Image 1 (tube, rainbow, N blue to C red):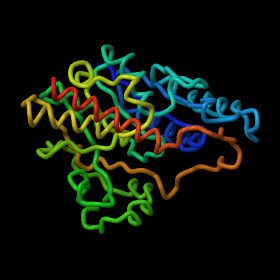
Image 2: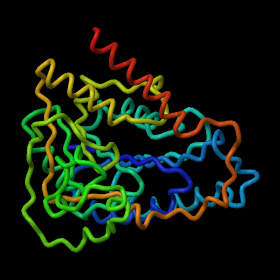
Image 3: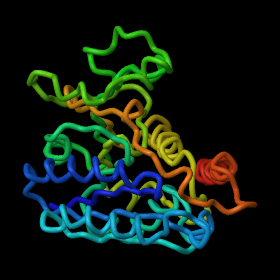
Image 4: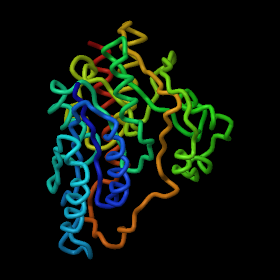
Length: 299
């Protein structure tokens, strides 16, 4: 079978990407299936004035290429270095690779640049996908306790009694996940509404995007692509009765690495003036996704 792994990074995230690549390389030691890996380094001149920056774009390009050398012999590498304004965020990046690969691969595995994940994560995601009884599925690892109880369906039992708060989540040392003893790994079906965060090491079957979910560029560049998917899957499963499942991968635990997030480049990159903020991009995407969702329901 064939699987697609994706990650979108800005120049500020290049050091996080190094951590990610080392984790990915160790993970792929346990994978025999074909992997297409499409890292996307976004250096768009819409955001960045490279001429006036203390660090030029070549620095990030060279780092990106050097890190990809670590992984290139373990996968089919389809890397992109972007300078234009067609792809300005993770949402439009997903639109690009979903349209390119949804008819070629069996499933997609999505990563954010700051994720910490065990060395068996990808192998367990793939094994779980192969055992799925439905072609429409999402497989989600477990997580540390977040800032509210709405995420508790995904929280591992070792962390469920930690008070839900932003301080406890953002102060969590992600590397402590490596101290866990081996425990039985098994799948549990989520009977509630769908719940996942896009780049938190989720596997999504390609059939979802071939048959049910259509990512188009007019949905925007950056914003809640996971919320859009969750709303659609809730509708198809609970309103139309389609056979769609979310499986929770118990005792494979992942986390964002906020406590040790690496970004030392703020004072070395000059950003352009008069560009949309992240919040403005997100708001535009929310509106577009809402309109697309309403259109699907009305049809």
